[in-house]
Length: 338
Image 1 (cartoon, rainbow, N blue to C red):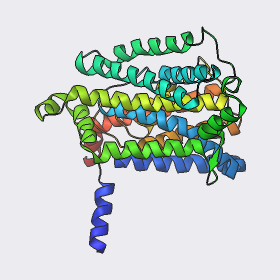
Image 2: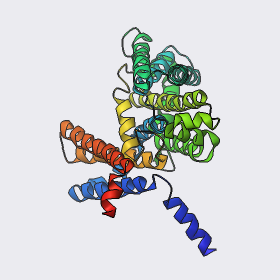
Image 3: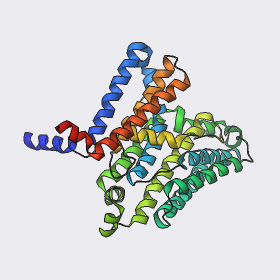
Image 4: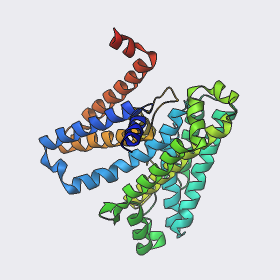
């Protein structure tokens, strides 16, 4: 029995990409403790709860981007889809339409964008940078046009204060078991997509496409369908983040989700998701999102300027990608053996 447990632990620790995950979690602990020593308020329960809530947006956007990075692609439109989701849902609610209908319409818009991305990249072989750059502008344009190029009024003006409060509490301000609902929503979606990627045939196909698309085709993998599925995951994550931002502000902001495509990439690569495709674990994305938010939170609490925050996080992202390139090239092993 003991040997079985030990072998299971060895298999878990020996998973490809687990080293990067452990490194990311170790870095998270070091960063958190270091900021806590500088400012004890970092350890306060209220700060931890706020940190988890703020981290949730980066986690979701990181999951969506990680799926695509594993396939060897990227989604530059994910941030604009966040804005589109926030504006579409908020605009409909200010018109008095039920929040449930508004959420479904926003989801349909994002899924439509995801399908288009998947078809352009998977079927028509457009470079993902170009294809999603185009849909990025389209989605942001929709976010501007849906309410005639202005931010919406408060959603409560349309659906009433009671319904507005329910929507905001469900997605942002409410708590369950003492933890903000935002985190529970992100955690549930994370677990669903973690299971899909690690335990299903679709997940195996996603890794296969990212590792070698030609070999995947020869193995019978439907590359087009797999690519579309990955972009649909990105679309779902973007939609939920848009709803969270809408609930946070209580209105729709045309600039919601600005730069979130880069935040998603950062969360993934810090956690060991390879931008070259085929490698990485969503556990790493969880760690990467936590590292990002802990850095942002800690630097804010010690009064660091925004420029310094961006500088530190940028260096970490570049270092993470550089480490992945070095390990993949085999130089690290050669230097270690010599």
